[in-house]
Figure 1: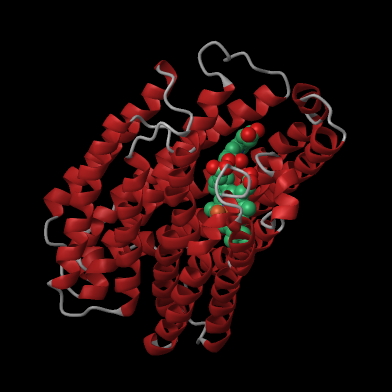
Figure 2: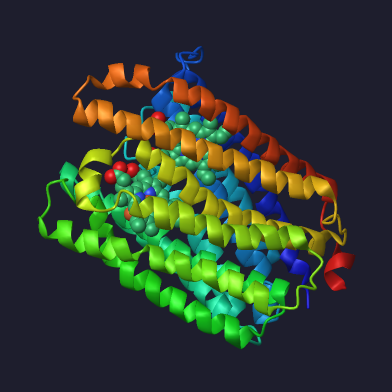
Length: 443
Ligand code: HEM
Ligand code: HEM
Ligand SMILES: [Fe+2]
């Protein structure tokens, strides 16, 4: 069954594509600045580009999650969205907040709290926007004909993500307290409730693409939710090692964060097992590639590369270096960017009634972007290890070290070019599908 109101999702996905291109532009600005080509410095210094790059990432992923919810919830609840008009109001206000924030970064020096740089006044607009979104999703789910585990996990993830945003809005005079609560947003999002969102979308896609019974798939989902909470909540301690809080966090953070890869391993095994068990008859292979790919790459990027610097004995050396950037790129790409690209690849043919998924452009987009991102991860990793050795072991000056390692950013830019070619091909495909139609959604 399809529902006409699922069309709203298309416009959220279109916003995603736009913001993704902008995000990459700022990535290149930083990459070039790192090799001395910093012509835009007066207007877009490195710290501005960095804030815009990471904040755009968060906004396009959130837009993708919202689009996914508007697409998935009607189908799971078996009813139209309660209000399509309000969903468009929510879309437009999200875009407006995004534009104000991005423009603002270029004219103001807002707080340097990585990932949460937007001023607290704008936070209130974000809250109103998210309340509207949650209201629409919850009302649709709870007045619908069914409440599936998949829909509940997805909605729970979105609801908790909104609640966890609040501690990040409180003002603290102490650096330590401020940092302590910043992680409730940044860590408990990506290593907690966003995993539920990912798990929900993954379960939905596996049900549709493999044809395995919902009961089997949803049993796994419980295991994933359990492992996520068991490890991720106390795992927050891996950000509390040497920031001025109680030493107990060295042990608690070390142990529980070391368990976090298990949730990602479970997701990878889950996806591969369901694929093998399934009928393999669904024609949309591109969506299947992105779905299985996401589960595997998130295990490598978040699970393995996260583990690589999560014990206090290693983190004391690697903290805040390019080793972190290595892990940050591959984890965000595998877990969240790829799952958003997966649901878009699945939903667009259904919404437009066109079936372009057998052509090679879509496959090329997948491989170019994935190989490009793997290369970028290696470049960041090599630069990061060299940085740790020179700066933290040999005690060379910070800026001298940055000069020493700039060659790795040439490699980064080459790989990023390959990555971006893949993304641009993906977007061209997206555009070629055209707009959604009522006929396709009535079929
Ligand atoms: C999809 C899930 C994940 C994403 C998107 C992600 C992303 C990130 C990002 C962006 C940072 C930098 C944050 C900042 O400095 O503000 C970071 C830091 C960190 N992550 Fe992850 N991560 C994920 C999962 C994991 C897992 C499972 C582990 C452990 C096994 C882990 C271990 C760490 C550690 C130890 C740091 C601190 C690095 C430092 O001290 O500089 N991450 N992560
Ligand atoms: C054209 C492609 C890209 C380029 C050239 C690029 C480059 C960069 C650079 C140079 C930094 C700053 C590292 C530093 O502190 O020196 C950065 C930060 C970051 N980028 Fe990208 N990036 C690109 C795409 C992406 C994508 C697709 C994602 C997510 C899926 C992403 C996620 C991040 C994150 C999370 C950080 C912050 C890492 C940290 O806190 O250590 N980037 N990027
Ligand atoms: Fe963390």
